[in-house]
View 1 (cartoon, one colour):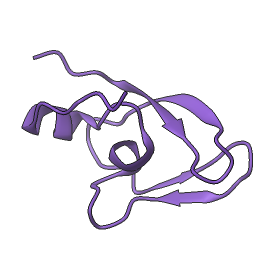
View 2: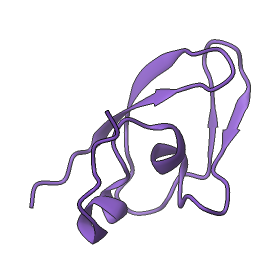
View 3: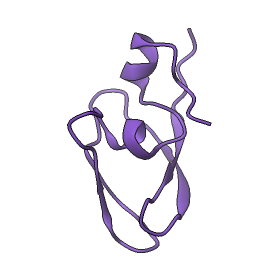
View 4: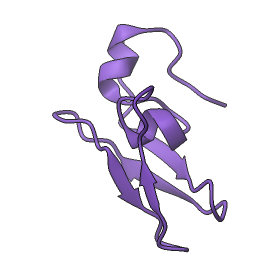
Amino acid sequence: MKVILKSDITCPFCGHTKTEMMPIDAPKKHYECESCHEALVAQDACCCVFCAFGSVTCPSSQVKGPNTLRH
């Protein structure tokens, strides 16, 4: 299985989208929107901001299950 390392994070506050590289070694729980500067925080149901706000789930979630793309 090929793991996708880029995800488009969309800010739920202003709608700004940015493509980011996902870390493979640790989940990213916080992310600051570069447009409105609001803090995006992964809630308990999601392991990281990529699973919560990204177009592609994080690498560890990709390995665990089939729902990689969020389009």
